[in-house]
Length: 402
Image (tube, rainbow, N blue to C red):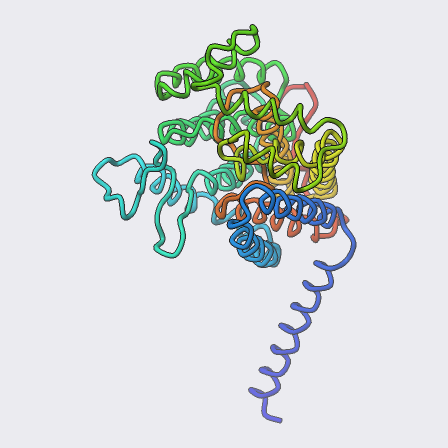
């Protein structure tokens, strides 16, 4: 055999061994599979709920689910360090897309408003929602920024990280999409805590963030402010908004109560949903469908699946010795849990209706695929075994900075 042929053969064997090693590391037991299992349970629950509320959309949701699972497998394959290198270039692309949504001269064939909101960019065969992608890119950029750095151990060092959150928040709020914008600050705080930021500084930056976020309130549309007023009136026992802006919330609470402890059979639940005219029951109000069909037990099972998701994500973070992967895992876990809490609160009348979906459960192609991309990231981070030696990632002591 010639030297060139021998070299080529050796190289081919090396690549084959590398692929086999990656496959073995992906399939072996690790906390990432707990996230996958929880996501599958929630996705199947979503299929059953959509079939009950809007049967015509169930087949489309199944297609998006298949795409999401396939994309998650692809995302889990590369080394997570690839996503760290792509974080800032991806952020520029996403910011450009968010700005494009707000340009009034863009034709409706590209950005088609829905219910007064400009959130989707048409790709002819389907639409894409940049704010969903912005959630992932935000976490990647923040994790990349905090990696090995200690500037966030001071108040001045925390301000750039706050800007990283407020820029996409402001653009998303202008679409308007209050629900998605609400997810950035709790995720930011969780990732800063995981990176070792001082609690006193975090309290200060939280107050600054709340003040700056309140400055964005004039960006809210009249119907959004009206929904907040309707919630306040509802808490006070005032029913004057129930047939107007508070109709959706009132219908939701009625159906949640009708579900009782054990829920109703599929036929009865379907009739309750149809004759109570619950708007957006296949996406924003899907938790109401779950409570109507399966009652309190269905709600507890849903929350339990999210707890499993969060537990798996935090175990992935604890197991990871890579600071970037650790922070991304914390961010994903907290963001998904925060989104679930807000969506559940909407259905139960605790939070105003913001148009936020229930992760993995609600109908929506962009949302479902993005949620599965998060699972793919957790799976990819988790499959990397702990190393015997690694650089210390973060500092948590209260001593002087070096």
